[in-house]
Length: 78
Image (cartoon, rainbow, N blue to C red; front, side, top):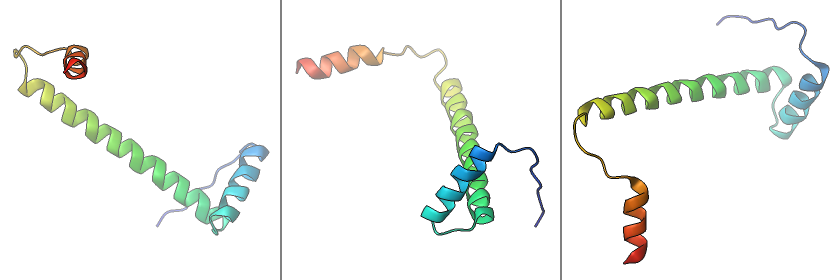
């Protein structure tokens, strides 16, 4: 496991992290670790989603698409 030092972090950010850590029954270090891990995981999920959508777009290239607004209106009119 690596170590990370963060310098010049705004005091208000540190205080908010301390409050959040206490609410989550974690140390400040544990809370920062949790927040960073969640953020990186979320970015990974977003990147994966974008890749899957690019794949779907390429699979349906040249196929006419119906506007979703039209489909919703048709469904509501039933």
